Image 1 (cartoon, rainbow, N blue to C red):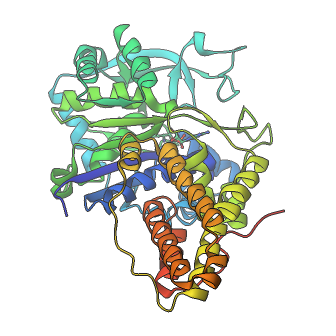
Image 2: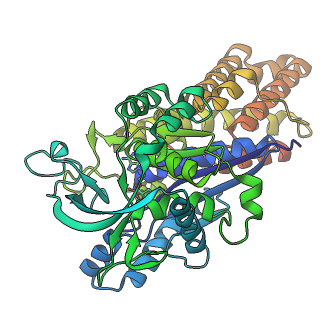
Length: 475
Ligand code: ME8
């Protein structure tokens, strides 16, 4: 046991539609990292949730002909059953519509910003993109439309509260340059540093309340509600009880790792540190900023018809197969691609023929030729594996495991224990025992990545019995 702690968060996702494979990517790599730290004996805390105080939900509910609450309840069920239970081993799922859990902390944080003299009111005119939940500029538009959402922004003129982000530019830059706030990978760090060197502008932090407004009223001014990003970012501390019961906050803040996609880098690497600095709170230790998943080289979109439904993949191939593809074949640092064909090829090659076949071969030999189960012991993770995991290079950690899987396959072919047991039983059995030991060592490394499969393999080793087929080949 160690007294180290590891607090990891995912973004809180918008519940205006079901989650897709991109979201599953974020939660999967997050879960792998948390499980890895948990297995080292660290005290971990894993937070995920949903970002509910948004016009997107109001609009989606209207389109579905139900109330926002009814709409949310349905979607949250999808969130929870689909990804989070049981294999995304989160400790807390925060909903920002939760007035008891989330709102007091968001209000306290706002008050701290006011005390610091960083909140002011201003007449504002701008182009608002509902898809981004943010103001965008003329130069972001392509043919008058937001290129990410394909819709024209609304021209809005209103009075808002602003946060003096500009004032914190230099301090944020210093924290990132000194490595106190780590941004991984370097490409994203450079991207944000170049933005910071141009200077940050103040940001809108509230919207006027309308009949359809959802969200947290601005303290002392009921005519305004907190803007979605201001309300959303604070979830990372309100979930720990900031502003109500802060035992968890004291234990786990500052966070060790915020895992986010590249789309929300600016919010997390500029606005969030600015808010924390203004409020006098410690900054996150690191941000892991992953790329986007495309399908067939194109952004997954309903209009292109190339959206891969994780529900379908999970039903057809099982949780561990989906975890495997995402962890092995998508680098956490760059965009990655998936198609139904690439998924099936990888599944058949690496899981059905690779790990599945190897396990069956070895445990068939063990069951037939060994009188009792091989006593396996915990072996420390090799440096190559732990270095890769510590650098968040999950894909490389898996490459390493699979190189041991093919080495073990070769060993069976070279030593041919199935023949040897007939001519020299003692030697044959000794080799089979070695194979089981190596399979157990590989299995231990797989535990944070493929938890279900890893459990099945170790149980089979302990029972000295070939397990049911782990991954059935797909045609
Ligand atoms: O931005 N590939 O929520 P969101 C990989 N509520 N990851 C993807 C992805 C893709 N194609 N698409 C989405 C929000 N993601 C805010 C966050 S946090 C305080 C508030 C993942 O539902 C990725 O993690 O739009 C991205 O950052 C996140 O989903 C955006 O989720």
